[in-house]
Image 1: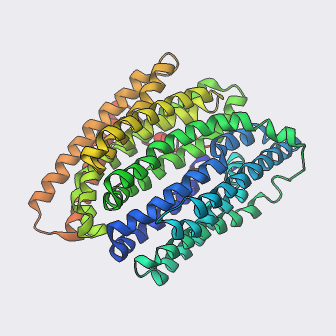
Image 2: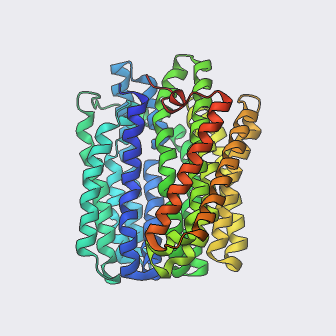
Image 3: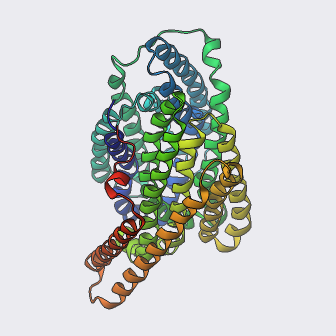
Length: 477
């Protein structure tokens, strides 16, 4: 198997190319179709995404863990893969029919775009990322998706010229998703073999997978439904502003989920072998590293959001910067909760803890959104997201406080928050002093922030006796 460090690099590339290329095209799309066009497209895409979540039914967590646990026994591995895939075909096929019903019977203004997003649902029939990741195989996912989605970005620049071309934008990205999934199928050759199993054996995976789906759905209630609510309550323009603010944060969170996805099959395998103390050591190092990363991102984005948004998206999206600054701090909460979820809760099969924490977050999000969006519009959705993301690690703490060293973890949060605040003040100060505007001025601010944050981290690590090389290569084997 590849080392954890290499897998993390491949998976970061995969995650980033899943969100970064649409982000690269976002400034072009924003200028071509305006805030209302952006809002219209994302309304259709968000509904399509909910159907895709239902089609995959929690497999992105359950499948990875199930494969990782049996990968040392080829016969058991083949049967487990076959049973899970048969279940996937059944659920994804029924969901595809439901999606077509929505497109032709329910969809409104977004119907044309929604129809051309149908390949998103089709791609769920042949999504094998869960198996490849469970086997610690990340290279084919990263490289093949990089090529396919780069080609998709080129097509966007060639064919999308005005608001009436939004259906082309949807078709390009949904086709890229399908081709990306199909391109990864050869990576399974020689690693796992499909052998038909009785339907009842496949259905045994349905209940535990559906349990995890509850949590997946809950997470996406406050990452997708907030945008649907903004669109319905505050209008398409406000949704477009919120979408572009959230898009940057979602891109940055790809680093967090990439590391978590790499660590989960590794920790699940270690859990099967009973290496509990070693797992706790991994968690401590991971928490330190993740909090260092996300604090830099959160305070850095907050420091430059007001300059970045109009430069990147255009002047019509200046308010996206106002939304982006507070939204950036969700990265700290996401990072904290992700380490606990992927390296302690899920590898042990304690799915109900995950479900309870994210469902609590979803309830908080829906309540706050319903109260604040009518009055504050898109800023109400930002506050709802902040409250929801804060709820998840708080509930985890209440359930796991006797098992994990939360006092030490919160110490890491405090330290990196102080360092991040110092960086933010420095970046703001530099911004007021330099005579340059535009991208040059923004680049100077970012460079200054990186130097300050890096220097203060080195001082902290030296003082605390933390070995940087060990921190950055944690868990490599």
